[in-house]
Length: 161
Image (cartoon, rainbow, N blue to C red; front, side, top):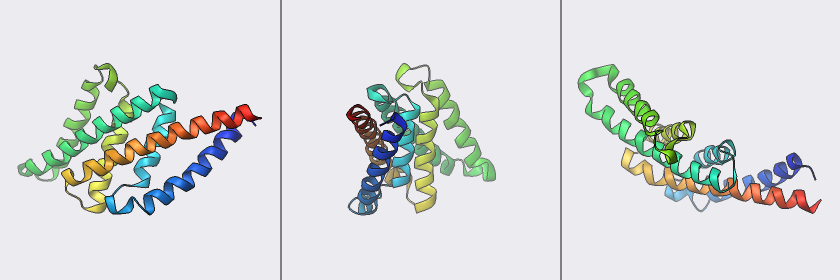
């Protein structure tokens, strides 16, 4: 089986499992399948294997924390009116880029995916920022693990052929 076909099979099958888990047992915990799919894609975007798993979890989680803090900062910048959220997001974006000087946080796109994931959950579900961070990071971790599993299964299917 070619690598592409093997990945299609493994990702397709595991996407069924992931969707069922997130929409079923994990739904009560505010965990989100869309955040997991972002992390899953980020795993491959970050090179896969252990390094991709680490980059995804660390950078996306860091980005989620920065995103949460940016939303909280926007609430404190009320005097800026319509500019409160844009200024807070700009500060958060600058912090992500500056943090890239730290090796483990150097995958800027992964950090941005995490920022967007927590902000999306806050905006879509109306959760308080502190209530959104745990399910976001849990969804990121589980999504990255599904990425790792799909890579492993795809590799086994390729070798089996």
